[in-house]
Image (cartoon, rainbow, N blue to C red):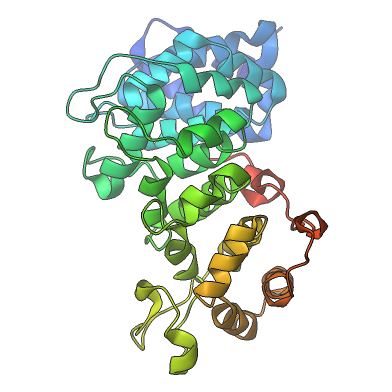
Length: 360
């Protein structure tokens, strides 16, 4: 005989709208405390929830929230990410300027990106969403959502911040890294250059996700020239500014700094989250993989900024990263380039950004 909770789950596909709404609303908490109840009958409740994403906004919000919480289950995650029709439903909604649940869908997409199967989104196309993008590529449309939709500028009910986590995980894959460093036909812009401008953004979600995305892109060593070139992405100022505070530097040190890091205001604040600072430092370490990267950092005199970061940020990982970076920059270059050991740093998926997003 089914329990009361199992009966409540059965109401997710009830023909009466009010009953579906009550069921979905009351089941949100159980998606964390008793997730197994949603896996009965060969994931029948999951199938119901996927349909409810297209229901009235209040019902859809609860359905997406439940799926967000359940997507840390490997079986559920596989079911969601392998359902092309469901993914298309999510994508159609997130690019809709009137979609009330766009932020929740962004959270769900970020969780779905924990699966390697999400790579297929790189080649996915769909109809052009007028007013947002002129590209048929899904990745381009999501980038336009993220950039144009910040602070509710595209959809008054969404900021799309959680897409930063989605991009970070997409950048784990070679196909993802290639996308971020390749000029796109529809706007002739290299996608990573659209993301780097958010490294000092107000939202910590956006800053953390973008820092991770940049780091993962930096694992593509052949793209380092593009990333550090002042006439291309010009990445260095965007990751040095967040780790720099209001310290004053003597002229013989600051004269070599990039223009954006000279004459900083006395109230300039350093990034408040040490884990984000550490991610930026590890990106710098990755950029020292190439001789060009090391020479450029010496040319713009990165060392004093790293020295002050080490002195002012009391965090073990940050100080360790500073030490490693200084060792690389201050040592003499060996005659044999092959003698240079690559920096020891781990992909971002090993840190907190790989955790599934939960909604309580």
